[in-house]
Image (cartoon, rainbow, N blue to C red; front, side, top):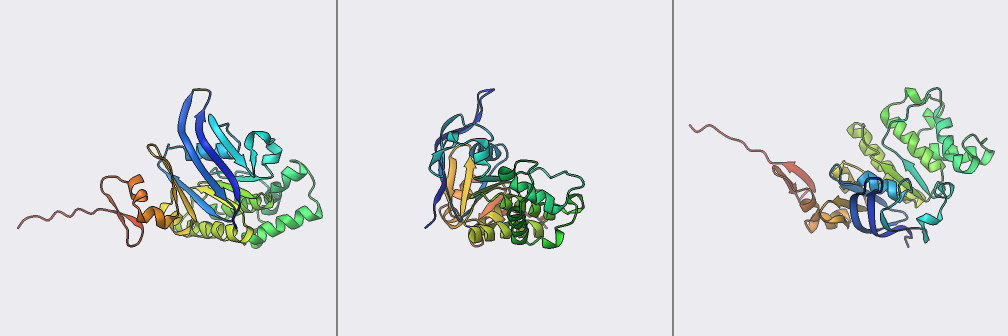
Length: 266
């Protein structure tokens, strides 16, 4: 049976300093062993929701419960042992090897400059093996491709040994084969580790093929939630992304551009 890891109710997110509400009345649950993809238009609040659920940004109102405890009852150090976060920004570090960067995932347990024990080092190596980058272990970070760097950041999150991993646009900047590889990796990890893996993405078609659950953030409807097949069959997916010149092909589950061919009258 899958366990609830994060649950939120009547959640409003945004920025207290300028009284800006980005989204409100949000309700949902994240479960262990599932890959959940958050999709929606630019500016709808996907990154704000991720930051709020991870404790980086306070909610405007509502309640967030993580493993049966309110998020406000956790210290930052305690949260770092529950939620690992992989952000969109490219890692720009010099003179650091893959193993050293993955080892930084152990900082919640050792302190930022803490020395890794033999157990820590084994955890780091297991994370490296899980994402199949053993051959990169001694490489310098600055010599890696974007896809390789993203795998390293996922390994770092795995080394953190958290029951939950959040990723903000993990396939941004990647070519298509690398996008597919990263999504397959995350799907496999959710099964193998029983972790809750929650990510935002603009790669709609990949999300529909790989995710257990889809969350669509919509300005009018708030959060639209379901399995990919449910959202495609009942029309909610099409409604959320409806725009002129685009149609949804229900037979294969993709959006198509309508082609208008004008022929000269003879």
